[in-house]
Image 1: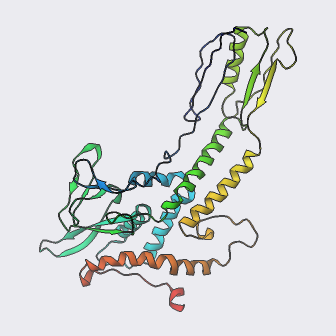
Image 2: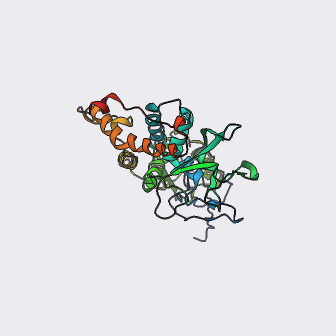
Image 3: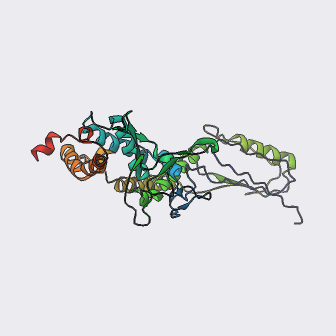
Length: 351
């Protein structure tokens, strides 16, 4: 009693950071670990509404555009499905019109991820429309005028302002506002983040020596400050992949249970990890409306997911055709000789 209590806390934002400790008097010590670093801070789902930028020149999107882009790196399925849908759009596109195939593919990707995409009108010297070129949607902003847009520039440079009517915008419908589009998967963002959190937890578990951690508890009056410092150094040096080692400790005249190792957590957490990964994966596939067989998911039974050709036909009719219809709207701006179209696959013709 009367012993001075000192605490040392080391917070690690990533598993690669080292804990730092300073010598203390002989007393209880606590090591605690903070949260891992996610791709996003979990606030992406906050729908802010649309309002004018503080300068009053353009409208701020209701959802962070860079946040939606960064979210692609949070999960393997969420990061690759937009590319699959882009490829499906490009696969049946007829080249040679007023939109290049690569421009259409980029715009298709923007429309799936951001909920809107943009094209710039290109004219010849006689003022005739030649083609529509893709503009990266992440930096495009609608100005106060309904037919005018600008593109934000890095490092605080002035935005590139386009002439009225020079930019064509295609967007998903959003009942809350009519200025920007709303990505269809927005309701599943929390499942993507939960999937990422479980993966980061699993990495922390592995980097900690494939164990949940423990409390090294001592309550022996014969333990000198020098011995305590040596034990702390041994515990710190055991942190990391492949560094977990046994340790010999001898306390003369020590009592039973004067030194205890109390496990933290349960090995069943590994099973919980797999359950969370599977549940969130199903949510992600549902929010993208894509069959597991088309998303590269391995079947868990011998029967598989069924006839892949039938799945492809149904997906084409229910998802690819509506995606094509979005971009067929561009023909409203293109001259008749430059209008775009899509081929109809053989299985759809026979159907």
